[in-house]
Length: 118
Image 1 (tube, rainbow, N blue to C red):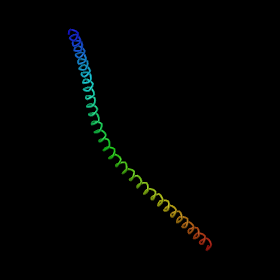
Image 2: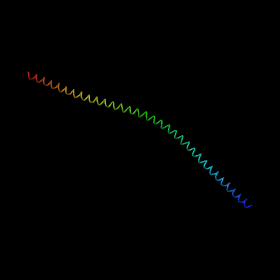
Image 3: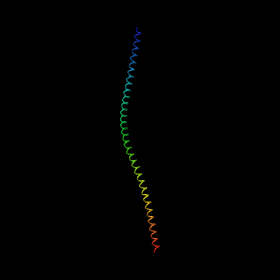
Image 4: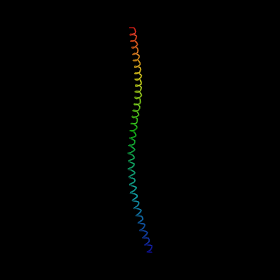
């Protein structure tokens, strides 16, 4: 019977040792779980901050893009109007030169007629 008692005592010691090992592993796992939960929470806060910043930047970009588009439209309209003014100025200059030439020719003709009559 003492053999059974010794075997039982050996099994009991191994069982206690296995339980202690399992508790130790569980504790290590719990520490790892808590560390990962902390990291997860930190990442979640960072995501929220970044998301807020991204929203602000998107809003700012939208406003700036709208203003830039207005600049583009105004510049294009002004350039178009300026080209029309240049074309009109060129036409006016050409017309003025033709009139001046015509008037000069009329004056030369009148002077020639005057000289011929004398």
